[in-house]
Structures are given as C-alpha cells and as structure tokens.
Amino acid sequence: MADATLELTVSEHEGETVLSAAGELDVNTAPELREHLARLAGDGARKIVVDLTYVSFIDSTALSVLVSALKRLRQTDGDLELASPNPSVKRVFEITGLTRLFTIR
Image (cartoon, rainbow, N blue to C red; front, side, top):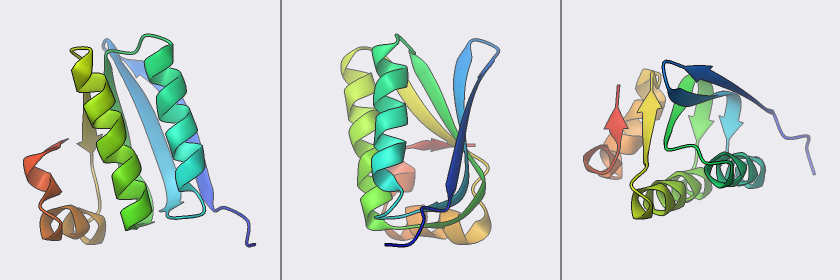
C-alpha cells in the first residue's frame, strides 16, 4: 500500500475550528480524515471548516466522509463548511450535486 499523501492541521479562527488538508483525499486517506473530523466533533467543535486550498484530488470515499461528518454535526446544531477548493476539486462537488448540501466559500 502506498503512503497516504495527506497532511491535516487543525487551528482555531474567529470561533471556527479549521481543518486544513493538503494532498489527496481518497480511499487511502479518508480514514484519517474521518478520525480527525470525529475527534473535533467529539471535542465539542460546533462549526468545522475544512480548508481544501491544498487538496489536489478528492474521490467518492472522501466525499462520503465529509457528508457523514456534515450530517453528524447538523444533528447537534453544528455545521461543516468547505473553503477554497481548487477548480478541479470544486468541479467534483458540482458534478455530484454536493454544492447544494455544503456551504463552499
């Protein structure tokens, strides 16, 4: 199995929890993304922003992790937003219709 090419960093910014991702969000790295999001939600984060500025690729496995995290957060009056996807990553959200589900800024 190839090394997962994903870096995740967490920061707080103006009352929001920002999870910055760099690399590829795919079947190999989705479990790490899921763990981070679950831990943040478990630690009481109400609003999580996933910064996709440095994400070069996203697949359906990673999309389902993001959708699951969004649904979990919304059940407790939280939210998950996406920030700064590059054009090719944003296109994946448009093609899949997820631009209607997520706030993308």
